[in-house]
Image 1 (cartoon, helix red, strand yellow):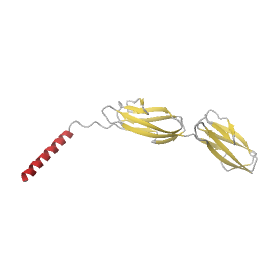
Image 2: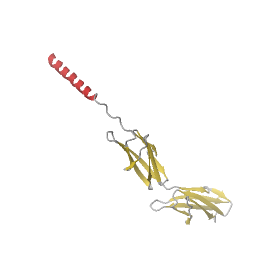
Image 3: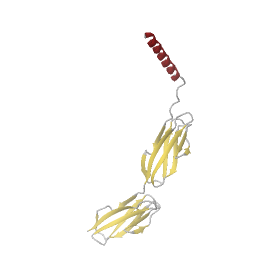
Image 4: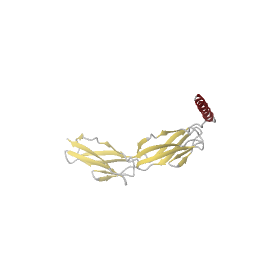
Length: 193
């Protein structure tokens, strides 16, 4: 019986040596690495253009952003601009090289319409019979309505209008409307002394 175990032990040792030698052949190629430097994995913006930047460990790798090839600099850096529609958008960034693993990164980007009323502050107390409403909207293609009346927008998305104050307490509704999006609205309560 000892001879059987001795042969089995010798065969096992031989097998371990063969596997070890096979593993010691040519070293495996280094893994391709991809880092997205901007934007963050989850990102909200009002901008109509998104710039995706990053760096890949090997400058001769192919980078694609949503399937579009992007030039890679000598240092492995890349930058890609893309139009960004409103709402949620998934952006796929891929790094490929023939003898390396493929790396995929997914960014979840949301473009929003932003309405900012800068003046007056909510719950303001005034003495006059009218008040000036100022603000901005992130997309100059939007329409602005103050107390139901359309207000012209400047090219930079800013607006200004005067609202009469007929009552001791007046609620002013400021709304931004852009085709295809839910309207944005804010309410301001103004008290007159």
